[in-house]
Length: 158
Image (cartoon, rainbow, N blue to C red; front, side):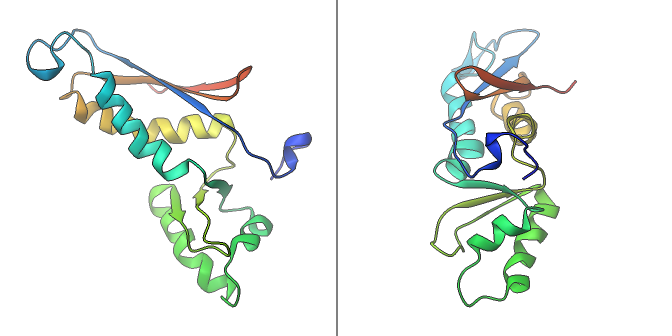
């Protein structure tokens, strides 16, 4: 909503998201023996936390009032429609809804959906599930969001 370049126009991206996990040692027993985290488990979590809610959806900031107005269902008071979305965004940093004018998927964030902000958002969603799925062994090191084959943003936290 604040871009000065051609990205100010409504458009989409075919993101590629890369997650890097680290550990001091490999699993010694069980179904993840000799691994940090089974790639299949990581894929499952990335699908649940990133792909399923966002794929084929529209990402928008809760502060982009004009854009969100285009998604508001016909005949619905704007304030009545935005209140539960704003509440969800405030509580969890995002809101996924299909209660939109065309029944399309809308993923509303507490930030502008740039690659930089998305890498941070998705890092924070994925970090706790990586820890759980690895039995506490793995740590999510970073998330890289490839907006195009030539443009990426990486986010990490200590």
